[in-house]
Image (cartoon, rainbow, N blue to C red):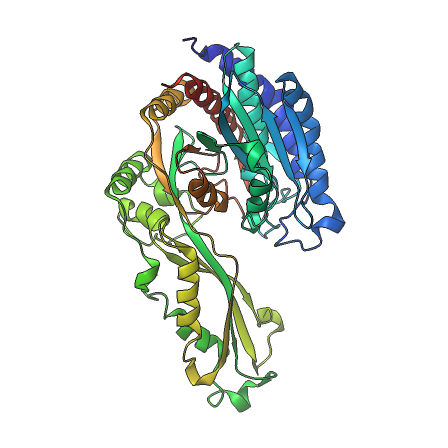
Length: 474
């Protein structure tokens, strides 16, 4: 069996990232191709098509060099999807590689000189929206295949799918997977490059993802605002009622979600992985976050923090409506308060059932007879990886040592990738490699998001090694 020559792999990967991928990502960051949930007029504005054109323009000659085919699929009323099919030495065996090209909205708080659509390269970091989440994925996947070609090493047939609705919960992807089912086939390996890493010192494999129930909780008490001096004490505050309703979901003192149906059993193996991850990361479990001076994490136990972030439900209020900015606020008792809720769920909890339970808890028997509504967005169930096959575990361990000089680590992620639960159900016999570049302070979805370029290169090397090992497995 021919083996990858690490020095040659490193030279190839570093060169293609320096000369081609980083410059292409700089141009990609300039495009404000926000996901449809955040830009309803995405079709008319044309930013999504511009991003597709950029990626396709880079990819076409590479795909041709690999003897493959590239198409842009467009189902009516849905975001486009880039479909790449690269033949392999074994065309009866398929690897599916996934990424997305849509982006989160701007967010406030960017440092001076930086912005969501302003690419800034500082040392090893490329700042701007979408480079790390997840613009690099197609480039990294194709670069891995090209690296194998550079060494004359075989791989199985590779299908690359780059969607454009992931940040909206991937509502379009199931329709494409169904429409392209015959062309996709039945992958024995799925590689997803849209996840995170605990640090930049080793390979991190994502073993689970939390689910999500999002929605807007609204409390109406009046048809119009009235003078607070006249009404306060008579008309209950919509904000106070909102607080009461949220207290039905969580303990306000600890943040613990008190609804039993929103919890799930944590497998013993995942607890062991959490302990190993906490030991590897140390204080970086929490120190990676930009705490204000004097602020402490939710728990002193590092293992508990890892489990909180990966296997326990947690409620966040991510948006508010019904109140003016403090500088413009008069003494008015407001007619309503609305809050956008984000409830993260354990990987094994059914999101549809959780959404129904939350809706009932929040809207039944409202305090004072207030008008309460909870408009639920599309729920997303989490994902728990199948047991890693020995050949894959060995390949990943080898990749971590070769590219980082450290053993690999495994940990669940607190975020959601709706695609994973869907493919996990559709291809139950497949092995999964879920990894990514979103490490400490990379701040996906927030201000000052960046792509750590060395990690992008090392992940590319990892994909090449996994594809080679997949072909040689027994």
